[in-house]
Image (cartoon, rainbow, N blue to C red; front, side, top):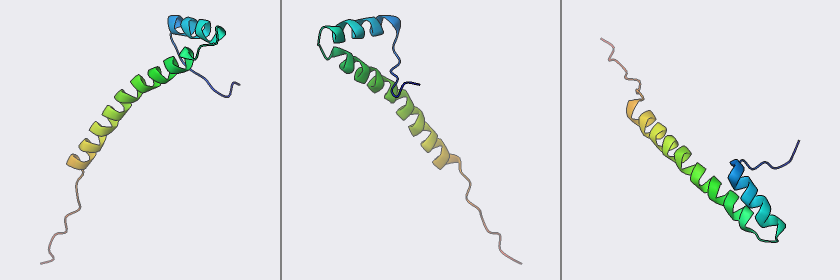
Length: 66
């Protein structure tokens, strides 16, 4: 198993492979850009989940003993 995996579309991986063969570091920047764009939906979903949890959690209410 490879120790590091980078997921890319076919055109992105082809461009990254061609750029690294010529000694450029554009492939690494491309991977970082993809990860940056991928992080936003997860942060947005996590923020919505935190807001939902704090708004709809029910605190236990103690009823007075009569």
